[in-house]
Image (cartoon, rainbow, N blue to C red):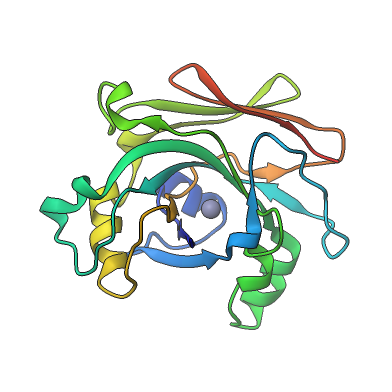
Length: 203
Ligand code: ZN
């Protein structure tokens, strides 16, 4: 399986990192070795002193497809979950300054924490639900999918023009504003419409 991630998909987040709002989705990938599941702890890697959390809604692809039209794209995912796109922001800034790919700052081991998945019909409207991240019992991020720049269907249609999607692939759909640093000892809890899906520690 592969993990595809979308950058700058909430205008307020693009703004907080001084990035322009994109006219087409910004895509990057994480290898399967980035997966962190079952609420296992995240270990701060040696190569960064500024690891950021980015809470995101994650789609699980349910069947293989390429060149998927937007109007059919909703048939390609049934389950949604939450994930943390861990980012070595210091490394990313150095790479961005040099105009180099972000890969190392986004694709490292454990950089894709994912929750269990729920059926998309368990939320009333997939384009109007809340998802939030608390760290040490303090609210840090509070997103709503009504603020997505590119819808889930647009993302699937766009990505599948270039890359075949396969059953089990995951798509991180971008983070709302409020990203920040995690430190050893932090306790992260994330919920979707009030239902807790992630609960793990930083070590
Ligand atoms: Zn992200």
